[in-house]
View 1 (cartoon, rainbow, N blue to C red):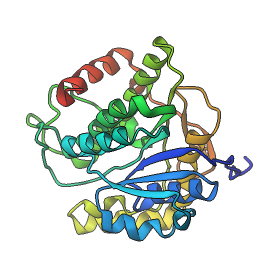
View 2 (view 1 turned 120 degrees about the vertical axis):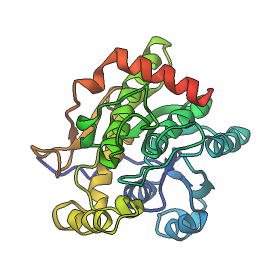
View 3 (view 1 turned 180 degrees about the vertical axis):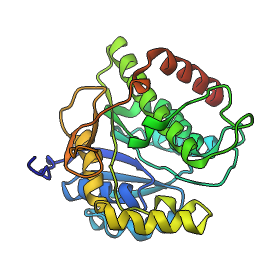
Length: 293
């Protein structure tokens, strides 16, 4: 397959990217910035974002702005969205990228586990809150590991089950795809001029395991991905493809290789469970109850 690196010009288009102070999010911002896009770096740490922003093309021309948000904290998400709404400037593309992997057991104020809260629930609320500003699409960053997901909507706090962080991660990434597909169905049902799509980066060398709190897990993630994975910019190309190319709503993009670990952007394989409409509607209803949106 021929490499895809020809990102269309993005002048005049505004992208909100969560978790863009490092890893895939930063590489996504760099690629889009190099094509003329306006970037809102939505990050938990403003200090880290300010340092990272200096490497995003367009930063010196005022095309990159930094706004603080912790997507695991629904109050923080509401405050962030309110700031953008008050400004009133349209957002062409929302990229729900921020994520954690292998973190120790913890619950949010809503009683949900931290992978679910960060990787999915905060982005669910953020998407709903920014809908009045959106003009083009929502991009959800998922993972090959969604295939291992066994989402239990009655035990989102892992009270009945023995906590397994990598299972919790797979569950959250399954939730991401269920949300994307249901959101796109609702866009079409309401005849809204928007689309929802998703992407995954395959095996990309990032620091996503740095918050695991376990030195072995962190080391395996750090060195293992660098040994066998793609550079982060190549993994980010799947997100950029989903965000900029004229793909139908509901599309899922990943690396083209046989196992989807490496390669260039191409349609990816989605598990049967990820397209379970009954489960997607149940997840939606549960998410509305948890977020109050």
